[in-house]
Image (cartoon, rainbow, N blue to C red; front, side):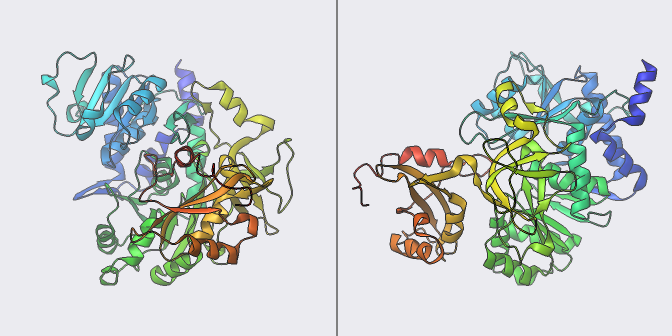
Length: 529
């Protein structure tokens, strides 16, 4: 048994070892800042060891699953790396979910324990598998009665004096984490990622974004999402940089923090950069320490990207991928931003990318097909769903569900989600292409293009827009704008202004709800319409 453990400790790939190694290279370097709290790498690693031992002391063992329901905090980071060292699979839960949605995840993942911030306790449902509830923040667990679970306060759990390394045999393909997808069309799927997958992504992204121990990164997107957690934060820890924790995005708070801490890197959604650019007090803050602004989830319009470069005077990069890739698959690098605007970049260092048709054949340049991947970063599969796992791994590649193509310079372009392609008049139209044109209208804040049933066109392109001033945008203005930039068959048949869009808890537009709510829109249309 000892020989097996010794061999494992020598050879293994384990996400917890990232922190241990950084603590030996940069023991006195500040690893984390939250408010007035500053923690060095040496301290952080010792704290993680204590938390791991605390989990073990209440019966959470290797192979168990532990969920966490918490906003961004040091406790989240401690829990994440403690689980890694103890061989526990962590299941982060979106704090924007409702109680019944949280119940589904806890049941589907068969979680034995949960770490929950006290402000989210009211969302905790009953769960047969859940045995241990660990509460972050002020809460007197001794007063809780008539529960099937044992409740524990966070502070006593990791107060033990023993902060030595936790010696646990964890194999490379053991599960590190199980993150649930947004579930835009059905119940969310649990994406199972191994230590190897997350480690290779962490190492690759640190390389691709040139992270060093001199980087100071502000974490303002939620840790429960793989974009912040694994595309930025774990690579920063690997490189020995500093992570500054923000609970949420607030433009002036962010700018003040950049100036105060001389931050070198931020990661946000395009709408966040837009809010910074438009903020009336932006000129009052010194943002010159920034070397890299990273964005994801959506492309930035050409004019906005150019404006951002002019204002921030630093590099920009887009990360493209998905939870199943842990998550970075391609990087739209700084050198391509203004000459290949709209692309999603070149493959990440550990990822092979192909374009495949429905016959399982790889395609050449400028041929549109499904984007497929091969990489040690790829997930192990979907939890409790072998059919969807088998479908995703068909033909020896992971199938992304995205359509795209490579241009002559081997740059990848995203065409659309497979399910969002609109077949109108026998021709496939990428909804995202139409959306990009509509976004150029000065009054448009957000847009979603879908196909609705039509007697003649089979599916009629329909654009839903939200205006910046909450006033209706004349349909003809949008249609004329599209006619100037798109082929006739790509021009929407109707444009409808809405006050809001149905959204997932992670901020994605639920197009299937828009379709269902307006399914009969063209019932009365004539064949010529």
